[in-house]
Image (cartoon, rainbow, N blue to C red; front, side, top):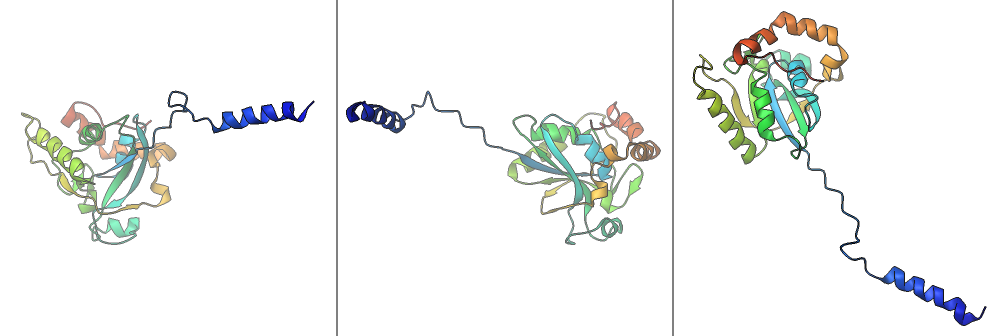
Length: 213
């Protein structure tokens, strides 16, 4: 074969590689991950964790401590009630699948919003209820949701005690607290039943509190 014939395929291949890819033929870019975080305190973080785990769009729920001043607190530190921290959960979620408003609605229906510094059978500032907003949008939505609860006719006899405060920092709890209801279903159910959490939710909302999947 002549050198001219051997050269033609090489030129054609080079031209094809150099040709620009049209927008119509370009591969679609994968959508960037847009996960956001929401942080709530609602009494025992085992129950708060269970209230959100398994919701469509929720990627993870982590138990921990927020709202106080002590850095890297332990469970024993927080339980003294002197750290300023509340048992909390931090939720990582996909806003394309579940909205912050939906998370707020689920939060309210899993707490007694009238109880000050405690929830059901757990007492102390470490068991207070709070919505820790991360930005102005979360603050606005949280305050609007609280206003709706406060102005619902004949819903609650007491004043709404849930704090709406800026998020500062979240400290994950010890490993044995994470996914507690899933890992220790017998222990958790005994606690939940003994505490009377579902009965209280039924009285307040007409339905028991949510338990994760």
